[in-house]
Amino acid sequence: MRWAVFSCLLVPVVLVIYGTSFGGAAVATLGLAAVTAVCRAMLRCSEKAERAAAMVLAADRPAPGRRRRRSRGGSASGGGGHRGRSGTGGISPQD
Image (cartoon, rainbow, N blue to C red; front, side, top):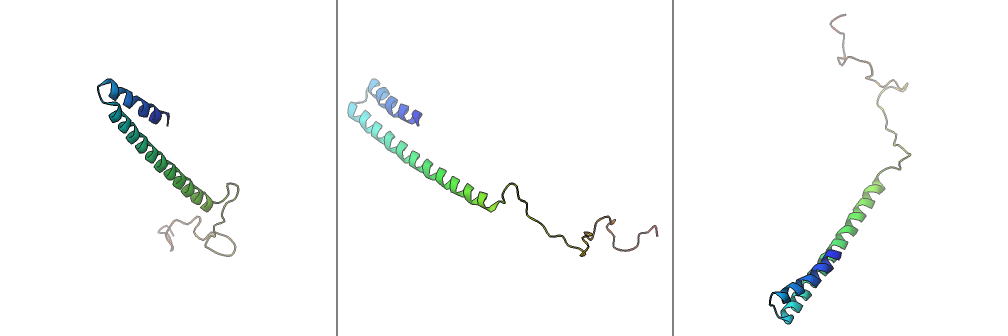
């Protein structure tokens, strides 16, 4: 924001130094101020939307200390079904 104010003040001074009328410099200053104000408003709106989106995403995540339990397929004894197998369901060639 400081740079915007600086440029809004510097541009008319430079224009007057290089021969532009005071009226022309004033119009340029008003135009720069209007563009700066619109850009600032758009930036604030964008930041608010970004924060809102971040809050929605944060609400979907579980709390840091809690983990969701995932159900495992398999038998009731909790064996896990496929643990320790070679990948083939039948008899291995070595048998």
